[in-house]
Image (cartoon, rainbow, N blue to C red; front, side, top):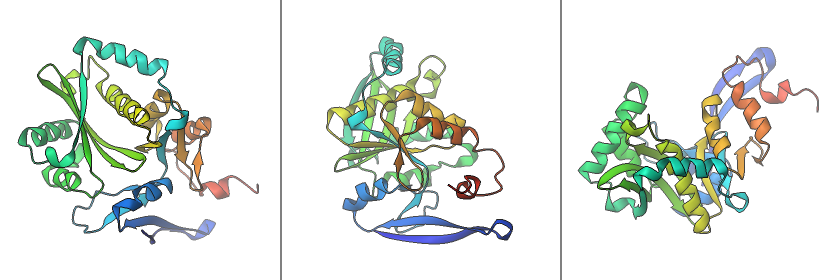
Length: 250
């Protein structure tokens, strides 16, 4: 793995000079170490040849501290009328399947703004070096949804989910699928499930739904969920200085 920096925002008035921090994965075996240092995969530029990661406020479930909550069980009861099932298959077994691709594109057209998840980007993601498995959810003969995951050693990245958006008004499908994947990881003795970034109040459902959470705060993995909530609730506010300068002299 190779860490590199890209110059970004500069503010001479407060002597703040920003550098975005990235990482290039050279071997797939490096995935656990890369994620453990707070990086997540970058997929916005489909022309990139290398597997690039960006440093951010990443969120993960530390499975040694995890157990199903009353909220998880309540969500499970809501899905009970559908009697849904879950299976896991290698990405190679499904990524070229036209029905799978069409289902994911239909969901993306509803949930992603500005055509952010078109057919070209979806194909890029399905062939990305970290994509290894797909969790398939069904009810009866119908598809409930899919979760694209990257699994390596004792970690799992819950990367993208796609589900039947027509059911959203009646059932908490997205929350249920995330819980089922986290529960599967616990049952299969993994150490961590990475749930993506955690910015803004809209991301706090991930924190509310699971026990054993930690977020990457720039220095390490922080279990203070009250601090995370306070940061998320002010993410949209204008910021004059970086957090270090706002914190004073301590």
